[in-house]
Image (cartoon, rainbow, N blue to C red; front, side, top):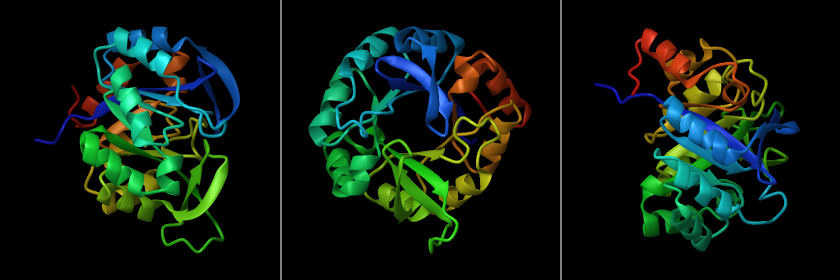
Length: 255
């Protein structure tokens, strides 16, 4: 029997508050991360992702205090990331209560970091966040480019090839975020999901673009093992229970 599809709210945090924008810009306040996390736990979320979205751009560490307070409130797996640059940073977040740690910018700068973190803590702790966008005109085999610093910088690196390399270096999961779709509520990038699914054997979390209930089963059909959303949950447009019902109705097992 296939594994149950996980439904995961994402808390994008800036200056201690949950925010949400479109394509990582025009951020608006969505509330207190600890309160939101506790509410999602009660609603039946399978996991939570906590991303400090300006930590890398501002060259500072993820706020471990907020992670610790959040971990105290929830009893579901918590992935934390943003500004993680070393094995010690990962250690701090795990000690603060995170179950997994998301790496992006630092892993692209030095891919060996993934091998080091997986070697010390196990691949099950390592989530590689791939912020991908369509790259017309660039000679990339997949047509998708990796971006860093919260989508602010292009890298010229093929996103699908990077996902494959990351998995090979010890990533236990790929958090695949479409920068083109992020915050637009126009639907997940199904082509991107399918391309990464074909390239890796580890679970793929689809992120970016959820706007209506019908979007979620399509992401799973395309190859996602988990579906992640932010604004539709934060602003009460869709509930976690409704997403699970839509997945169940489409024939996908849920918890």
